[in-house]
Length: 269
Image 1: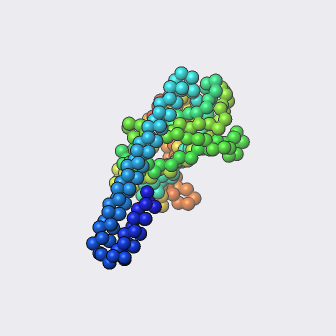
Image 2: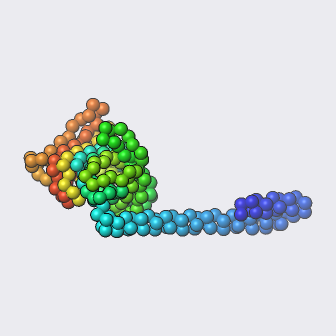
Image 3: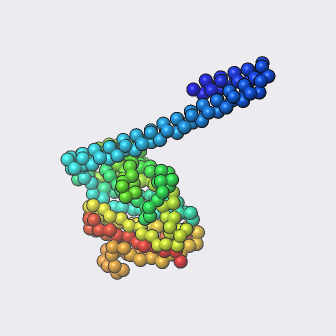
């Protein structure tokens, strides 16, 4: 199509040069510009169609993986969860999750994780979220990357299906590192002066949990526990200064019950 349009444009220039008729040149040029506009609108419409089709495929993959999980008992249990959230001044975050888990089914081939922001983000931020997952062997050495399928739920949570490079047999341990780049995830905290929750809610008992939130520059925060009381056995929440001078709030917990939402609420001072 583009070759045809450029051909018409060249023809218009040539014809105008031969005849010297400005009206002919202007008329053909206007026609070519209209065709260019039509081609652009057609490309935009086709791109939107492809995006809708891609999102539909993602939802279907999520749906049938959920069916497989239910029917084939694709379960796993976290033994150790270590998460670090690094916040930038504009609210962008990088989250690194190091997960140690055990397969609780005959053969675990994928697992599901749902993560979201503490506010209803516009699509312009959501579509820029990036996730990389890599397997790690028991000795701590990096292994192959994991394929990931993502889709957005109706409540604006990102559901990730992580497909393990090698299926894990019942009772065997596996480890992964997940790195999320999430634009404006903490924008209300950093730009609007509101408090924000940093919480987890796992479906199995978690033996060991460490959840850290690191703030930029010399900023400091007010903090409060979520899902537990200060001094409760097995839980601690504290704020310290790192060697680089950043405030880092850390939640440490052991034997966290299943479906218990635990974490912290932070507000800038």
